[in-house]
Image (cartoon, rainbow, N blue to C red; front, top):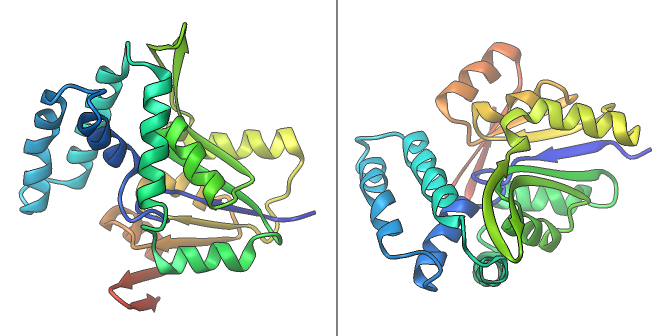
Length: 223
């Protein structure tokens, strides 16, 4: 039986956030109104200028996306999602890109992301993941209805349910994540890798003796 290899996507594989890129693209394509860009700009500038946190910025993007998506055409959002991935599919970190290529076929590749499922699915299929999870925005009659379920809010639960449902083993398993939201699955795997970790995850990694990998420009550091 193949072991599991569990990856976060945003900031771990993809060198940005799928929900950020999708939100901005939906404005460019006219699916979201221009004001949606302004709703996130203040938090973006605070983060860029080191006056605010990335967490505040991404939380604002998610709130804007979740609010603006209601009533939008599913077909339009999926079309824009395809365009984003076509343009940015190779905007990935070398470390995780090479790791995925190395273990593909030897492991069951699992992706767990807080980004919208419609774009997660396209990205995950591009990178040939076997199983993938994202935030589900429900629809009826071709329009998003505002109902949302986010399995990534509890990544430990996602992995445990997947294991129980499939019978897949966590023996020899690998996990790769970049923030404290990934601790849920990192603590379950045999080889947790904290990649470009934020401060909270870094502190936990050092406490637990987890591997830390940092990629900067063309150099990969392993601790």
